[in-house]
Image 1 (cartoon, rainbow, N blue to C red):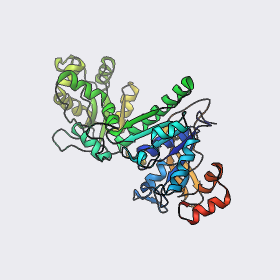
Image 2 (image 1 turned 90 degrees about the vertical axis):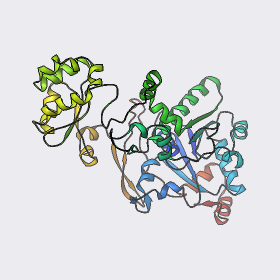
Image 3 (image 1 turned 120 degrees about the vertical axis):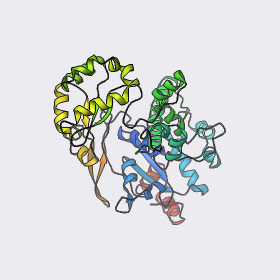
Image 4 (image 1 turned 180 degrees about the vertical axis):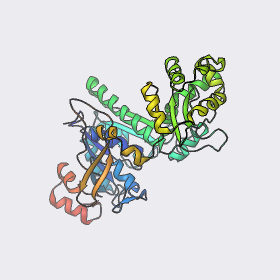
Amino acid sequence: MGVLDGIRVVDLSQGAAGPICAMTLGDHGADVLKVEPCDGEWGRTLGPPFVGDVAAAYVGMNRNKRSLAVDLKRPEGRAIARRLIERSDVLVESFRPDVMERLGLGYSDLSAANPRLIFCSITAFGPSGPWRDKPGVDGVIQAMSGLMSITGLEDAEPVKVGVPAADVTAAAHAVQAVLLALFARERTGRGQRVAVSLLDALLAFQTIPLTMYLASGTPPKRLGSAAAYSAPNEAYRTGDGAIMVGAYTPARWAGLCRALDRPDLLEDQRFRINADRVANRPALRVELERSFHERSTDEWVGVLEAADVPCAPLLDYPSLLALPQVAQNEMVVRLKHPVLGETATVGIPIKVEEQPGSIRRGAPLVGEHSATILREAGYGEVEIRRLVEAGTVVA
């Protein structure tokens, strides 16, 4: 039994942000009903790679859900969705503003029928303002949010973060918003509407560099692996590769100098305190790499770990997933699916000791649970058969 056992979520979202939000709620016990078009949500095609004929990305974002495939363009389809929402605790949707109103599923109508409903909207730019109707996907938001302007090598073109940062960050904020609203409902007995935009999520993600800019008026530069506010805090070339080092506090800086057998660096006025090292970062890099070139990455990891200096090799996915710590943290979970076979998914990062989350089922097939969900909503067998025969529902 998870923390959210007994909470029912209707997931009308598609793509990444909304589905990850709803999946996280499902990981912690919520009964998540994925309401998708009769031909499946478009996220099922986000490949390659594919698991069977389903995109691997979709499989990774939609576990712990049951699928109801229904045509919301039909009045009977919208009536089904409305009945489910009226009996649920949370609705997650990621349509453009006003789409839910046009479907007759706007917040005012739904909350009148279900005052305890928490209505979570995820949009690209927000529910109001000059950009409210502007289309936006993760890469567009990364570009417009300023994130790409500070990502990449100093003398190269800006680059996008290698994961859908806007989607994943918005999903995390949406989960927080839902949980806050559930907590408030315990006090007031009333639900409410909560909203998260991909743009706002990435602005919050950049709290440190944005605050630095607001204070200084100087836009941050692209620094590759380095941090703008501390040094040494970047990757340095070794005899056979590279090593990431974070030794910018006074104790760690002294420990690094001792581990490198470079007492001269401690006496060098250019590197006296963190602000000095940040100001003289290029010279510091030259001095440190002169030492790091003398040994291999593995050798230096051993030396620095013995000196309690934070460091790490630069791992690729195969090396990462082979780490005993990843296995210990149960961050790769394998599931058996009756159609897709064995699938692997990323584990649950939030560890709740007394009511832990769990991965109970893999991503559903299109309409895999339609008939069951409709029965639970009070539809009889004859009515379900009629809806299927009419093409309103896929079961």
